[in-house]
Image (cartoon, rainbow, N blue to C red; front, side, top):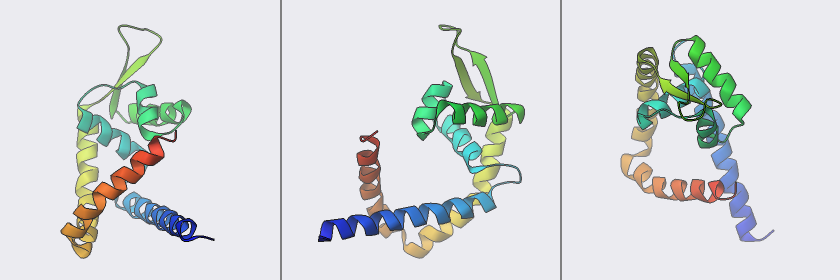
Length: 146
């Protein structure tokens, strides 16, 4: 096996393991009843500040429309999002974060920020800052393959 193959396998192994560990720790830190997928959608909607269609959300998270519809339904039942018909195309729906959803997202951030900050502090802010461009470029390469 040449060096690039070995390096690629090591990189993917580390990223996959880090992803699994991060998801596990984040899930434990989230408020009771909130799933990581719920937080991710609420955070996306809060940061975007705009409504999104379920298809747009599914594309942003690289999941099926069915999976996103399920997540949106759970968020709607919890009162965390408002779903309305698209005024331009009644076949489509639009999703917006509700005030309760914003509060839930903020509560989730409050519970996970200490854990995330601790990891960044232990690694060192400058090292993390220097790794971000490489990770963003890596993600971009993977996204362009879709």
